[in-house]
Length: 250
Image (cartoon, rainbow, N blue to C red; front, side):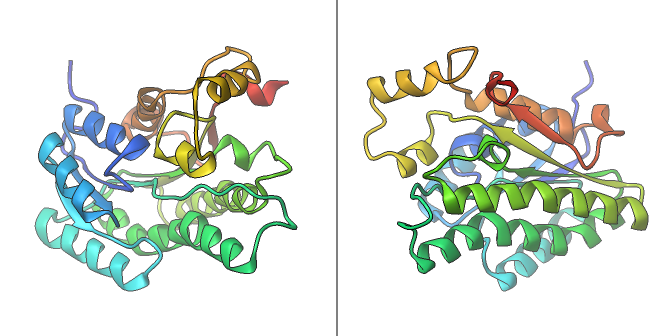
């Protein structure tokens, strides 16, 4: 069977762990030349060595870092076909308990980084041809919670920004697509940022809220991202792929 990402160059932000690492591993296996970026240099280098992919230190909230990383990929690989805007942080608090500093940080990391990634990657992806941007949102970008004010806001904005980017790319080139992915909770580092102690009792409580009664896995999400990155989804743009075990159908 032909590898699904053969001859493609891909960048996965937040690639040192969680969804990003699982996606980078799958992309590599499917024939892509993979770059992962992360603000955690130690874990990034470790993942790079383990997976056999390239690593670049990257603060996704900084314009200069985006310009540098895109220039480096262009110099080394001559093009970019897939961008996965995966880097993000979790935060749990209601609107009254959220400080202005916390609000700004969550939006900077979870939303502004997606804007910057799309803005600076699109020109190179347009030149490279046959491009796909996948923005990692969350089920929290579709279904709100009383204690996820900043996170709900940022992830919902990623969903709508994705549609705007998709329409822009369709008007300016028919070669670059943009879609969002919306997973329910998974047992990753992100969950630990929401809950101090994600023990079995807490996991069981969350699972009971999901119709299929289990959390999503990093492999579930990586497989969905792979589909959107591949040519199999060439007519899909401006859409959201929901991976929530039926939660939003209730």
